[in-house]
Length: 186
Image (cartoon, rainbow, N blue to C red; front, side, top):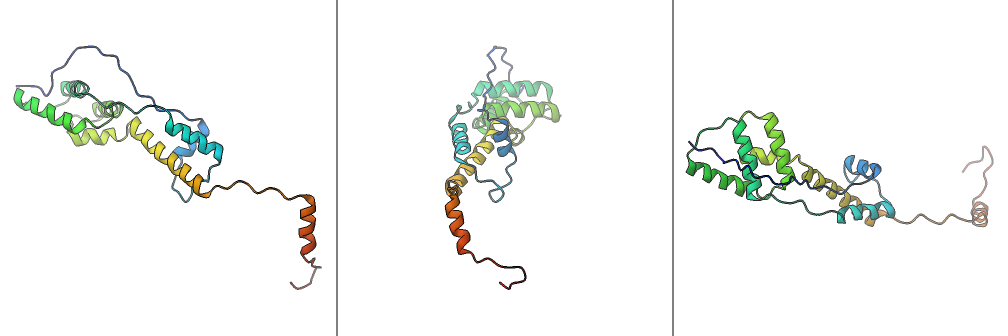
């Protein structure tokens, strides 16, 4: 009976994608976002830093077929699964590759780690995709969406602070307001 994959012992360097970083205050702003209504109107400096965050970094890599096969091979070596023929195993590999090739590599690695620890059975494609939804690339995508929302709110609602009035202007306004004595009706 065939296994779902064959383990390839070639060594390739493990490269992880790295999301651009933000300072602690901006990172907290993105992490604590609860919705547009409660979001603050950010100023131009913060909007500029968030724009830099959106434009920084590279797109996360997608897996190649060998990456998917290697992860499946390792999972199949430790997880329970039904026995299949070589032809069925090859067809299953093709199906898994087709179902997972659009998931960023680091999210697949995250799913692999989660499923290795949590499930006694060999996962199907939907279980792998669900586990990948909590991966670093997905989390970064959410942070980018929040950053763009805050920038959009800034562009719609922010206005520069008004110039303070001079002492002469304040005196002129006071002179226009009638003074009331205690007990006098308004």
